[in-house]
Each structure stands twice: as C-alpha cells, then as structure tokens.
Amino acid sequence: MAHDVAALAAELTDMAAADHRTAVHANSDDPAEQLAWRRLTARHGDRLGEIMAEYGWPTAELVGEEAACAAWLIAQHADRQLDIQRRALQLMQQAVSAGAAGPRELAFLRDRTLVNEGRQQVYGTQIAGVNDGAPVPWPCEEPERVDELRAAVGIEPFDEYVARFS
Image (cartoon, rainbow, N blue to C red):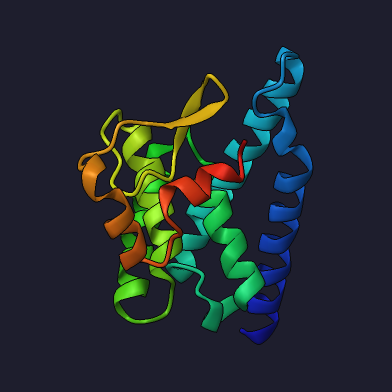
C-alpha cells in the first residue's frame, strides 16, 4: 500500500506540473493549443475520478501536501467534467469537515463548480474577464458580503486578490 500511495503522490504532482506548463494555452488564440489544454485537463480529470473512486479525496495525510494540492488543482481545471468537480467538491467538503483539507481551497473549488453550473459564486474567486483594466468577478450570491465570506475561509479581500491580476 505504501508503494501505491507513493506512486499516486508522484503521479498527482507530475499531473500538476504538466498543468502548470500548459495552462498558458487555456485561452490561447491558437485553437490547437486550446485543444491540447482541454485534452490534458480532461485526461487528468478522468484520472482524478479513478483516484477518488479508489482512495476518496487525496488528502495531505494520505499523499503529502504537494500531491494534495495537485489533486485540488486538477479538480479546479476539470471545467468540462462537472461530475468530477462535483464529486471532488463533495469529498473535499468531507475532508475539510474532518480537518484533513483546507477551507480556502474548498472555497475556490465551490466557486469554480458553481460558475461551471451557470450559478452565482459565493467567494468571488472566479474572474469573468477584465473591464477597463479591472478584473470583473463572475456574479456573486451576496456581493456585499464577499470579503466577510472570504475572510472566514482564509482568502484575502477581493481588492487585494484582483490586484495580483492587474
């Protein structure tokens, strides 16, 4: 089992490294680059689905901090696989409740999943675009409470967050 878990941790971190290398292609003007990104994230999403079926959510306790973070990134980028995102969200929620995962990452995944479902986000973590040089979030359920909700899960205020994108 220990070898399996070590191999799983290495696989997850390798997947995240490939994601980081190719993420620049997600919004490329070149359709071939966009397609390559979509294929990569779909392959990774499929594999994460298999991992979750076998192990549940890959927590830091199981696979180490780096690989757990990688699993979260893979779930974040499984945008065309709502079943995978929803399952990850459910399992990650259980892990957060058990103290085995962080509420900050869960908040990002919740927002991402809501936006992909065509619903309003909670924490304002997902940016729809840029208007006059300012990042614009996807619509939020309670825009007046966004910073309060963000603070509750350890996310910086919205203005500080979007300043990194400017």
